[in-house]
Amino acid sequence: MRHGRAGYRLGRTSTHRTSTLRNLAAGLFEHGQIVTTIPKAKAVQPFVEKIITSAKSGTLADRRNVIAKLGGDRMGFEWLYLPKKATDAEKEHVQKMRDIAGQFFDLPESSEVERNRYGELRKSPRLVKHIFDHIAPRFAERSGGYTRIVKLGRHRIGDGTELCLLQFCGAEDGAEIGGRPSTRRRIADRRTAFYAKLRKDKPAAPAADAPAADAPKAE
Image (cartoon, rainbow, N blue to C red; front, side, top):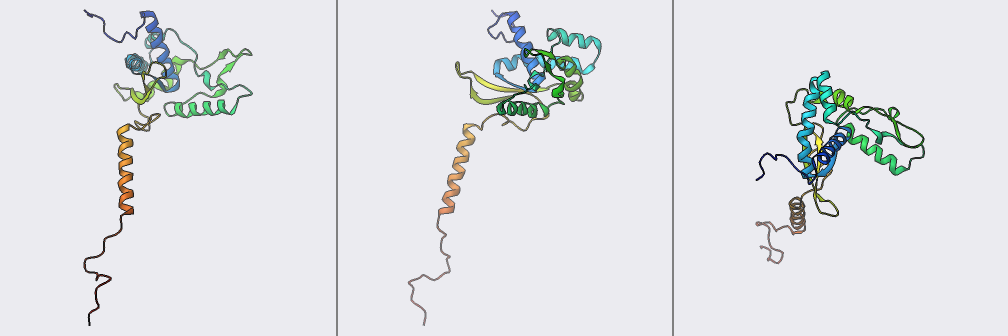
């Protein structure tokens, strides 16, 4: 029997599962949204929401509690850094990430992120400070439900696992953000376009009171 085994196992040991949830939560706090599998998203969702609830009070005890849940404070936003000879693809990717994350919170400046000559991260904004200063105040008037899961309608290459989007609530553009329209929606759109074309190509019916072309003229 499976008594006392609540929650998602994720096919991992307890230490591996804890590390996975911490990394997923850190990615969500840093980027505003992440793409992952549905079981992982459902497993990390309550973990993230408890951290935000603790951060809303802003006390020293809650700050220590958040640091303990995340396994220690860490540096984030290393993706804001661009090397001196960055390619156009790298610049476009970073700008796209900034546009997405900017919908959810104020981003630090790129100058706050520094690396040494070996490419290792030397200075960067702290993640816990970012949670308390930018994320928790957004949900001050909300009692729960800070995140949402959006099914993307596509599957991972390899094992075919269905992917979803885990993001913060309040700044989304709709359920179709980052996803594709459903099969039912595409079929309905094609059917609507087909019947619209039929109505357009159909010749207009002659009026009932109009005389026929071959009818003899009245004397």
